Image 1 (cartoon, rainbow, N blue to C red):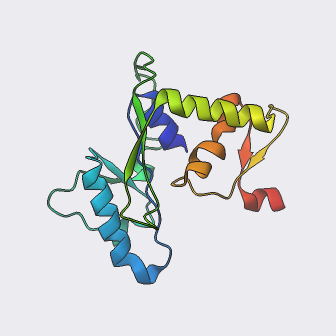
Image 2 (cartoon, rainbow, N blue to C red; image 1 turned 120 degrees about the vertical axis):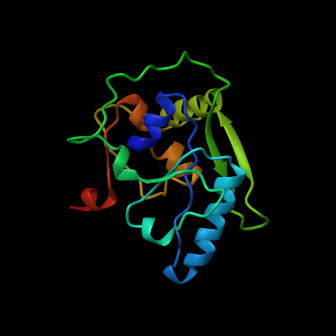
Length: 167
Protein backbone atom coordinates (compact mmCIF):
# COMPACT_ATOMS: atom_id res chain seq x y z
CA UNK A 1 0.00 0.00 0.00
CA UNK A 2 2.95 2.34 0.60
CA UNK A 3 3.92 2.20 -3.07
CA UNK A 4 0.35 2.75 -4.27
CA UNK A 5 -0.13 5.79 -2.03
CA UNK A 6 3.26 7.11 -3.11
CA UNK A 7 2.17 6.86 -6.74
CA UNK A 8 -1.08 8.70 -6.06
CA UNK A 9 0.62 11.46 -4.06
CA UNK A 10 3.17 12.05 -6.80
CA UNK A 11 0.58 12.17 -9.59
CA UNK A 12 1.29 8.73 -11.01
CA UNK A 13 -1.54 6.35 -11.83
CA UNK A 14 -1.25 2.83 -10.45
CA UNK A 15 -2.26 -0.50 -11.93
CA UNK A 16 -2.36 -3.38 -9.42
CA UNK A 17 -2.31 -6.73 -11.18
CA UNK A 18 -3.52 -10.11 -9.91
CA UNK A 19 -1.21 -12.74 -8.51
CA UNK A 20 -1.05 -16.27 -9.92
CA UNK A 21 -3.71 -18.46 -8.32
CA UNK A 22 -1.62 -21.59 -8.73
CA UNK A 23 2.05 -21.94 -9.52
CA UNK A 24 1.02 -24.43 -12.24
CA UNK A 25 -0.49 -21.47 -14.10
CA UNK A 26 2.67 -19.34 -14.05
CA UNK A 27 2.82 -19.09 -17.86
CA UNK A 28 -0.77 -17.82 -17.98
CA UNK A 29 0.10 -15.36 -15.20
CA UNK A 30 3.09 -14.01 -17.13
CA UNK A 31 1.12 -13.79 -20.40
CA UNK A 32 -1.82 -12.03 -18.71
CA UNK A 33 0.47 -9.68 -16.83
CA UNK A 34 2.39 -8.77 -19.97
CA UNK A 35 -0.86 -8.14 -21.90
CA UNK A 36 -2.17 -5.79 -19.18
CA UNK A 37 1.16 -3.97 -18.85
CA UNK A 38 1.29 -3.33 -22.58
CA UNK A 39 -2.40 -2.48 -22.94
CA UNK A 40 -2.15 -0.06 -20.01
CA UNK A 41 0.96 1.56 -21.51
CA UNK A 42 2.88 1.11 -18.23
CA UNK A 43 6.08 3.15 -17.99
CA UNK A 44 7.51 1.14 -15.07
CA UNK A 45 6.66 -2.20 -13.47
CA UNK A 46 7.32 -2.79 -9.79
CA UNK A 47 7.19 -6.51 -9.12
CA UNK A 48 7.08 -8.37 -5.83
CA UNK A 49 10.53 -9.73 -5.05
CA UNK A 50 9.12 -13.26 -4.70
CA UNK A 51 7.62 -13.15 -8.22
CA UNK A 52 10.50 -11.41 -9.98
CA UNK A 53 12.20 -14.69 -10.87
CA UNK A 54 9.09 -15.85 -12.75
CA UNK A 55 8.78 -12.75 -14.94
CA UNK A 56 11.44 -12.44 -17.60
CA UNK A 57 11.52 -9.13 -19.40
CA UNK A 58 10.78 -9.27 -23.13
CA UNK A 59 11.26 -6.74 -25.94
CA UNK A 60 8.58 -4.07 -25.65
CA UNK A 61 8.29 -4.36 -21.86
CA UNK A 62 8.83 -1.24 -19.73
CA UNK A 63 11.63 -1.28 -17.13
CA UNK A 64 10.98 -3.81 -14.34
CA UNK A 65 12.20 -3.23 -10.77
CA UNK A 66 11.69 -5.18 -7.54
CA UNK A 67 9.26 -3.43 -5.19
CA UNK A 68 11.81 -3.26 -2.39
CA UNK A 69 13.98 -1.01 -4.56
CA UNK A 70 11.54 1.90 -4.10
CA UNK A 71 10.52 1.38 -0.47
CA UNK A 72 11.98 3.62 2.26
CA UNK A 73 15.02 2.35 4.08
CA UNK A 74 18.73 2.86 4.69
CA UNK A 75 20.49 3.85 1.47
CA UNK A 76 17.20 4.33 -0.38
CA UNK A 77 15.98 7.60 -1.88
CA UNK A 78 13.58 9.49 0.37
CA UNK A 79 10.49 11.48 -0.49
CA UNK A 80 11.92 14.69 0.93
CA UNK A 81 12.14 16.34 -2.49
CA UNK A 82 8.76 15.11 -3.72
CA UNK A 83 6.80 17.89 -5.33
CA UNK A 84 3.14 17.07 -4.95
CA UNK A 85 1.31 18.12 -8.12
CA UNK A 86 -1.73 20.40 -7.92
CA UNK A 87 -4.97 18.57 -7.22
CA UNK A 88 -6.85 17.57 -10.36
CA UNK A 89 -10.10 15.68 -9.73
CA UNK A 90 -10.01 14.33 -13.29
CA UNK A 91 -6.46 12.93 -13.03
CA UNK A 92 -6.23 9.18 -13.58
CA UNK A 93 -5.25 7.49 -10.30
CA UNK A 94 -6.04 3.83 -11.00
CA UNK A 95 -6.18 1.73 -14.13
CA UNK A 96 -8.01 -1.32 -12.84
CA UNK A 97 -8.62 -4.40 -14.94
CA UNK A 98 -11.82 -6.39 -14.78
CA UNK A 99 -11.48 -10.00 -13.68
CA UNK A 100 -11.85 -11.50 -17.13
CA UNK A 101 -14.24 -14.18 -15.86
CA UNK A 102 -16.82 -13.46 -18.60
CA UNK A 103 -14.63 -11.87 -21.30
CA UNK A 104 -11.11 -10.57 -21.84
CA UNK A 105 -10.06 -8.26 -18.99
CA UNK A 106 -10.81 -4.61 -19.71
CA UNK A 107 -9.01 -1.60 -18.29
CA UNK A 108 -11.24 0.75 -16.31
CA UNK A 109 -9.89 4.27 -15.83
CA UNK A 110 -10.66 5.65 -12.36
CA UNK A 111 -10.11 9.39 -11.86
CA UNK A 112 -9.33 11.00 -8.50
CA UNK A 113 -12.88 12.32 -8.01
CA UNK A 114 -14.37 8.81 -8.34
CA UNK A 115 -11.80 7.25 -6.01
CA UNK A 116 -12.30 10.02 -3.44
CA UNK A 117 -16.10 9.71 -3.58
CA UNK A 118 -15.91 5.93 -3.09
CA UNK A 119 -13.46 6.14 -0.20
CA UNK A 120 -15.48 8.88 1.50
CA UNK A 121 -18.77 6.98 1.07
CA UNK A 122 -17.33 3.70 2.37
CA UNK A 123 -15.82 5.42 5.42
CA UNK A 124 -19.09 7.20 6.22
CA UNK A 125 -21.15 4.03 5.74
CA UNK A 126 -18.80 2.04 7.97
CA UNK A 127 -18.73 4.85 10.56
CA UNK A 128 -14.95 4.56 10.78
CA UNK A 129 -13.02 6.55 13.33
CA UNK A 130 -9.44 6.52 14.55
CA UNK A 131 -10.35 4.45 17.64
CA UNK A 132 -10.94 1.39 15.46
CA UNK A 133 -8.57 -0.90 13.58
CA UNK A 134 -9.34 -2.16 10.08
CA UNK A 135 -8.66 -5.75 9.00
CA UNK A 136 -8.90 -6.81 5.36
CA UNK A 137 -8.00 -10.04 3.64
CA UNK A 138 -9.04 -8.78 0.20
CA UNK A 139 -6.28 -8.48 -2.42
CA UNK A 140 -5.23 -5.04 -3.64
CA UNK A 141 -5.98 -5.94 -7.27
CA UNK A 142 -9.68 -6.24 -6.34
CA UNK A 143 -11.68 -3.01 -6.05
CA UNK A 144 -12.98 -3.93 -2.59
CA UNK A 145 -9.44 -4.62 -1.40
CA UNK A 146 -7.88 -1.54 -2.95
CA UNK A 147 -10.60 1.01 -2.18
CA UNK A 148 -13.01 -0.45 0.37
CA UNK A 149 -10.48 -2.36 2.43
CA UNK A 150 -7.84 0.34 2.49
CA UNK A 151 -9.87 3.54 2.41
CA UNK A 152 -9.70 4.01 6.16
CA UNK A 153 -5.99 4.86 5.85
CA UNK A 154 -7.02 8.21 4.42
CA UNK A 155 -9.06 8.90 7.53
CA UNK A 156 -6.26 7.91 9.89
CA UNK A 157 -7.77 4.53 10.78
CA UNK A 158 -4.97 2.04 11.49
CA UNK A 159 -5.00 -1.29 9.65
CA UNK A 160 -3.57 -4.70 10.41
CA UNK A 161 -3.27 -8.03 8.66
CA UNK A 162 -5.70 -10.88 9.39
CA UNK A 163 -2.88 -12.91 10.96
CA UNK A 164 -2.06 -10.15 13.40
CA UNK A 165 -5.74 -9.59 14.22
CA UNK A 166 -6.22 -13.28 15.05
CA UNK A 167 -3.48 -13.26 17.71
